[in-house]
Image (tube, rainbow, N blue to C red; front, top):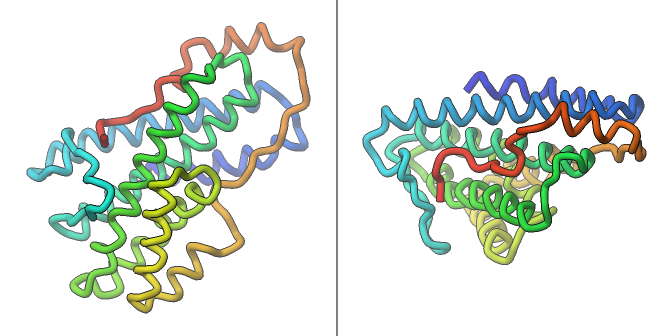
Length: 227
């Protein structure tokens, strides 16, 4: 999952936006995030062709009360990190897109994208019991650190009733299993899904940005079928 190595550089570039206030640089950050998402989705499609389980192209989210049990830790680790990396990119892409109003993301489209992200977050949360099972010893909980933190932060910021219940159950289960270090990391003040700097209005550049960003797939964020 080396594709995720490009995410820190994209986030670092966003940290500089507050000082630079350059819409062209905002659009460059957005392009980078969407490119990473596309490569993640390509990895997902290629990876799942090798799996002879339900965790392939026809992956169906289990019912709300049903946890995911994987064939092995490699599959669990790969898919939960794919979902986590994808969620990070999608959240920041939508936030950057809201700054560039020229992307034309309608009020009807935005909730749909949030539901897609929430679904992937729920899949991470439904993986907690498997990754904290006795058979996996410390390897499972350790591999859960980043995915669980991303899921927790997203739920705290944007979660609906179902994802909030799943998150509360996951945190409770991790504590009952005795992995207090994992809960401390998940709920730490240092966050992954941070607010992005607000851009000052620059209406004079709006028309040129519309041309530069024409065809961006922000309104079609979905990835391979996980729902």
